[in-house]
Length: 122
Image (cartoon, rainbow, N blue to C red):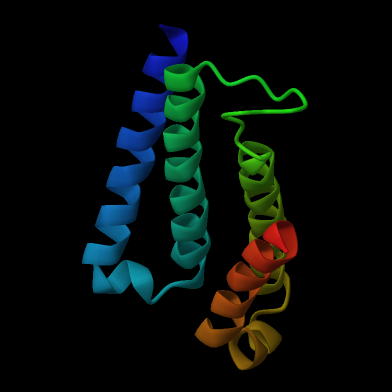
């Protein structure tokens, strides 16, 4: 029962954040909301994977017939890397605003988010 409540809360809360960031152009223009979008997408996928864990009573033993192949731990790795890059982003935005505005552009932030997924899943 607890897994269903946790999974539902994760999907509903993070899913609404994803929808609202995608729907609002002003939020997509700011770098911090791009990091929030990446984290919310990952949290939505965590919620869906918890549904899967509860639905199929998954146990990560060898050999696993219905295992998740450690997707849940990989999603948590994506979240941790995203938090780290977001903290670097905020540090440079506050402490070095002129360097930040010159070098940290939207493609750099999107590239950092893609790197989080590729490094963790690759």
